[in-house]
Image (cartoon, rainbow, N blue to C red; front, side, top):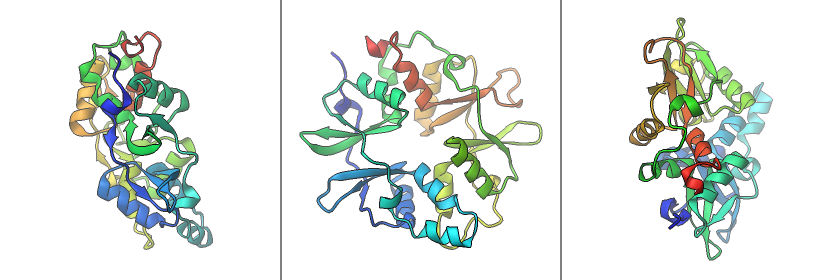
Length: 270
């Protein structure tokens, strides 16, 4: 029997009103350890979605004091994406994987009888991988992203944020002068410094990066999924098993694995 969206979604949705400030949104994202909030109207109906990436772009794309002031006056309603992408709770989970892949989105709001009951994300689908048989393409090297965004450990935070925004990468890999991976900076790492006090002044990526988790290019997708789930990470740095301190070979993310699951030949599409 096909597994349904309701079987893998996480119940409940974190919401905010459109007049919430960016600072308030940042606090909610950090407190609840989530990547997005659903913006609702006074009747609780979803009108948009606001992600950590949206907040990152809005907070850091300011070239001078005047534009900075404008950015900090924006609200959740100003930056949210609309309409909200939804999926019925009784749809097959493979349909959620297909839509995430084709529409390049990371989550869908789950609807049951016209009401929001939860959300299903890339991470939720990855967490269920252990219940499935391995995909036909089994190795990290088969599905990883060869192109990665990198910077040196002394890169100022605003420059790293601008590079992530312009390239639409959700993370940047921090390397030393020899090219060895030192850590990773994602949108969530920036959020504690999105405030009205210019808290990032003088800070570099090495001040906020989180440890880089690595995986060999010849490791299995199951190993990659297990490591992502165990550590609550969204991406792993792919390395050469024989030269672990050399420049990274690529990155594999939870989204890359979902893309494989959405392929016509995948067991998820059977």
